[in-house]
Amino acid sequence: MVTQNPTRPATSSAIGAAERVLEVKNLFVSYVTPRGQVKAVNGVSFFLRAGERMGLVGESGSGKTTTALSLLRLLQPPAEIQGGQVLLDGVDLLRLSEAEMRRARFAEIALIPQGAMNSLNPMMKVGEQLRDTIRAHESSAGSKEIDSRIEKTLNSVDLGPAVMDAYPHELSGGMKQRVCIAMGILLSPKVIIADEPTSALDVVVQRQVMETFGRVQQEIGAAVILVGHDMGLMAQFVDRVGVMYAGKLVEVGPVRDIFKDPLHPYTQALIGSLPTLQSKELFRGLSGLTPSLLSPPPGCMFHPRCPKAMAHCSVEIPELVEIKPERWVSCLLYEGSQL
Ligand SMILES: Nc1ncnc2c1ncn2[C@@H]1O[C@H](COP(=O)(O)OP(=O)(O)OP(=O)(O)O)[C@@H](O)[C@H]1O
Ligand SMILES: [Mg+2]
Image (cartoon, rainbow, N blue to C red; front, side, top):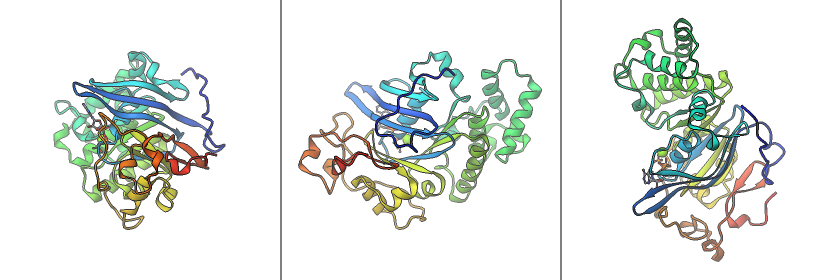
């Protein structure tokens, strides 16, 4: 890939600027509906370092899946990417042609979609689906070579070669999920986005699948964005967390810091509702309604529910800024504290 000239935001720290494999800048995505534009992703910026694991959390409808799908340009109408950049190793994916984007998917950036198990084609044997993925990118690869690569990949997610001859419905949920992980890592992408990869599985299987995912991710050195609600899983799996609220990132920081010392009032409420760090708790949201994304409130999106809201919170839109090393927050309480 040709490297453009990624500019470092003024807020980046010396550590933060190192080897960013993915940089999302000011991303805007709307669903254009007859009732108006649903502003599902409303100016989101973050970066991902090579090999790191970042979590994306937030209430249902906060825009996590829309963000994830935008990064691979997999959104369907009425969704529209209305602005921003998605820089993968400095190349803006939003400016690639469709053909270039197709080549980048799986090979550079892969998605394990929400409800991934249902994304497998029920009419095709697993082996065929995996073969298709390789063939679509490497037309010169021979069948023997392809099959041995598939066997190796299946083996790395603890599945035997017999799985190749199975239809998806013949596999258990955990096995289907492993097939989806195999598909995600098959071409050793730099970035893997996993959208609630284990939410349909029971806790024990979930843990096993995540262990496998973590191991193979490290083996191929990919960076991961893990989307989900499960704060316990986040605590165990990710290095950093981004907290989304109503289409915006309100806080980003190392997972330990987010649990120990949340900065944004929304994150504070979210963490405060969890009994302990290690306990497995699903985040179900706070009292009060999330704002309409058709006509979002002026100022900070959280101010109508915020216990610490000040007069100007209903007027001024806070920016996500780094207020201490590695801690980004978007809240007027920290105005003037930018590094
Ligand atoms: N096809 C669509 N048309 C209109 N609005 C949509 C459409 N798809 C999603 N939205 C809206 O976009 C917003 C963001 O949805 P998204 O699926 O990205 O949220 P999410 O954070 O992934 O939620 P969940 O945790 O439930 O998966 C929501 O308000 C949703 O209602
Ligand atoms: Mg979602």
